[in-house]
Length: 243
Image 1 (tube, one colour):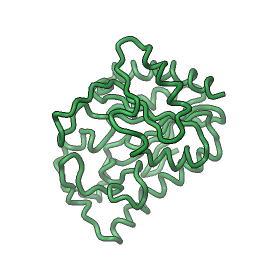
Image 2: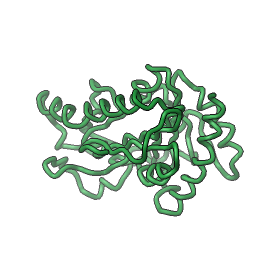
Image 3: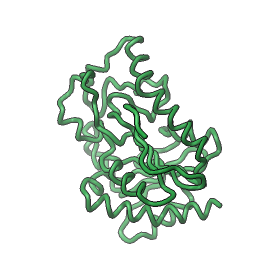
Image 4: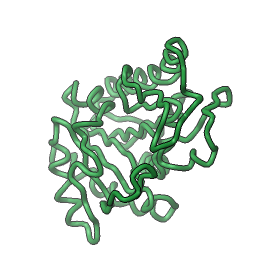
C-alpha cells in the first residue's frame, strides 16, 4: 500500500509492532521547487538517514510492519502539528528554504496534499490493526550545521512525552548492550517534539517507543543490518513487558 505521502511495508497485525518513520524519505515531487542546493537533500535537514532501510528489513518479519513518510521533511514535516510554522519549514539547520515561502492558500494546499493524507492513513491503519507497540523511529545528525560545537555522543536516544511505559523497558535493555551510549530524552526531549506520537499514541492510550539512532551508525547497509538485528531483539522484550 502506498500514496504520494506515505508507504506501508509489510502487513500490520493486531498485537504486533508498527514502525512509524515520519522522515524516511528525501523525495521532492517534480512540481515542487524548494530553491535549495540538491546536496542538502542527503543531509539530516531533509531526511532521517537510514531509517527507511531499517524499517524495510524489520517489516519482513512476521508481526512487524512499517509506515514511512513519502516526501522530504522539507516538503512537509509530518512530525509537527498542522498549525506549527515548521510543518512547511522556511528554514532548517541554518539554511533558508525559499520555495516554502508560501501564502496561506499555498500552505493549506501543501497540507492537503501531504500532511492530512499521511495522518489519515496512519490513523486508519492503527484503528484497524491495534498494535501492541508503535515504534517511532528517527535518526539524528552527530553535529548540527547551526551549532557545530554541540556534543552529541549518544548512539541512540529514547524519547517520550507523558507515556513512558515502553521507554522504561527499553532504556535498561539498551544500556546493557556492549558499547552503546544511550540517551534518556537525548539529543532532545520528547516532551518538546513528539507530535505524531502525541496524536496517534498518547491521545489513544497506545504504547509507543520513540528511538533516535545516530545517523553515522546507520548510513550504510552494514550499520542498518546491525541496528535492525538489535531492534528485532529489543521489540519482543518491550512488547512482553507491556503485556
